[in-house]
View: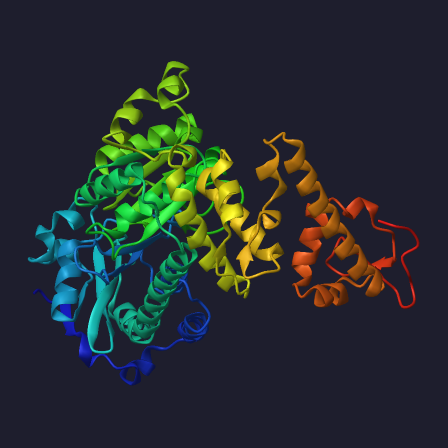
Length: 536
């Protein structure tokens, strides 16, 4: 290598050898960098702050931090900073220099690239007319995790050896912090995956021929990488089917991320899907990774697909075609390895006719179609599902409920379940809260289950049960002088369940004002000595 350039072994750079280069400005920069390393926790924020501090001392036009992927098969991450625009920007780093610095754990420097025999042949430098360059490896715990890259086209003020010394010292201090930040982020993501798994306490359950067929199809679909469109009414378990496909696929160790397309619109939805750069729209105060990027290596589930607007549909189509996208406000193309599973309860064919859904997107998504049947078409699954939910919510509510009585099961079987499995789940949780025995009885179930039966005996029976509940609750509140916490203790239930019971029995509007309202509650409670003045 010519006299204009030099290569330094990374393990020979010790901060104690470079104290002589410190000026007041450099010393202040070291103090700011040290404070930042102890403050920032998100890797991207830490990298960006570090680059800003470096270019405040070093006259580099473009700066970047390149970090090797933590998992094999992934691309390195590059965070770039452009001095002129003062914005986060994609930086065209020299991959040859980065690879050499990381592989050999060496710092590379040249203050005259055009005169250097080795560097002048690198097209990534010559095309941009780079005049000087610095590349310093980042080494943490004896392992090279990446590199700091700086270059400049300014010939009158090139990068020099003092700048190299400064960056080498910064790299020593920053390497451990960068590695720690990435490790913490990885732990957070794994923790989020575990929390999502815990929240999904139940899976597809059923003994009906329809569910047996669904299970067989899921097993076959999981072995492929095909895009899947899941159809079915609200509450049938479309997300559970998507999770089952993911958990039985080769991507099971990767993330499963879900987004409900009906909850967000336009720019916010695009930001959730694709992420955004800082300043890309009002309120975008920091860079944010989207669901597509977070699901890299795993599966992305798009629920309520028909609610996608025209803009997100076009962007999603490109992702399906290329597996590439750009964050909002960004110019760097990001490539991801994801499987997309979509779901809808709408008729997409009608939406295509109405011009509200793209036909080309429909064909891209509908490679494999899976339809989850409504609960009313598979009534033999109801007892099995009910017992399953009893086990879950008896533990959750700390109640000793062993099952559903025959009478209550018959009531469950007679109901049409327009809300499907989700409605059944809610009904069982409701029954667990209000049951007073070790099994669920008909009177413990929501009143709506009996609304479709017009027989006088049935209505009379349930009206009598409802009135009996009102008397019990009224008596407890009277004895507790209107104090809901004390009344709940008398009834042997949680105070939140008492509030819920009052609403279920339509008693709230009939309660007298006992003189004050408990903090955080809409229910009246009694001041000392107050009594109920009239019947409920």
